[in-house]
Length: 442
Image 1 (cartoon, rainbow, N blue to C red):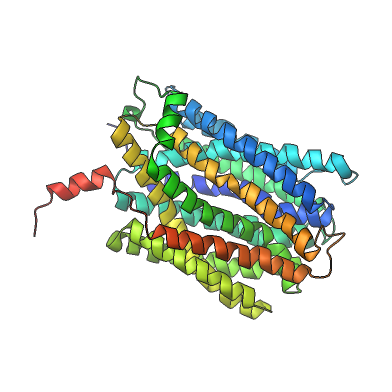
Image 2 (tube, helix red, strand yellow):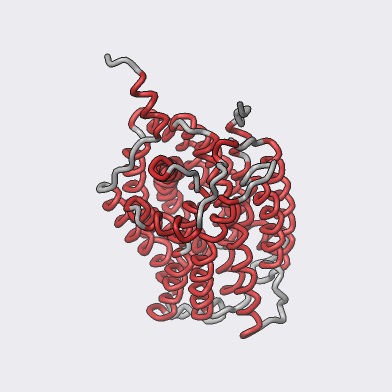
């Protein structure tokens, strides 16, 4: 019998996986577009190309993970390799020579953006696949997920809230890149160490690694024929794309829309994250009482409404007040979205008789890679409609431009997601249904 993995040991891995990629997503526009002068049109093209490449390689990466058979398990070897590679790619991403311009800058940005996201895809496919395997019952799964989202929020405090102050005030300045490189090195070392520590302490269930290895083409056909894949994937993409815009645009929202120093993003991000940390405990109780599906629908609606407050904010105080509601909705999505995905994975394993969580999560990741296309097009639209092309050519309405990017676009996406979620039903985990069947009727 496999010794159970303590939820905290699995959950701490989220701290390591979150720091690098969130620094990349949270600071890429500020670093490349506003400071180095990369044109938003080039940014949009690169993100579109990246999304296509990533959508194609994601299923292959998940398929390779599902077929891996070692004495250390299926997922652990991939995690050990991808963690340090992500850290190294992030350091390269924030080490662009200041002499680069034009096509040279575009190529540097494209190469390291794609490397970072490829490594992140490997990490997420393998790390996420362990959640339903290690914790088959939804209540314990919800506890482990809340803990790991708590670690993610702790990582966000560092990689998003603290980073602007470190990169533009403590270790660098508003218009230099030195602070970004130093910060990336520190974060990379921490992230790699935490991921390896997590991997050492978890134990995979050998029963999930059957002798029969999943087939790529047959597996993809089966997945795309599953209606839940499309329903949950597309609705989840509405949430993922919206939050990707928020994370990437908040620093410039603070600079242009609120008229404050970039380092002041610390306060807005801090309030959102602190509210999210506190909300996780509440949402975990709501899940235990009402189930993940009901909680997911409610959280979606709260998150959508919160963007109205951010749009109306015209100073730090009103933005902080709106941030409280953003945190409440976001924590609900953090607590519930992965549980809904895990239910889909359970349902797939039950229907097909094989555990191919890596392939399925990577296929779900294809929807997530829409982030790059949609956020790239959204940023490009700021140049078309509002004249913001870069920090060197911000146009006449940069403040309104980033209200659109951070508030209006995310509101539209999450409102669509909240409405669509009302019409989605996902079966409970099989382990919970069997437990309910054994309990005597009252």
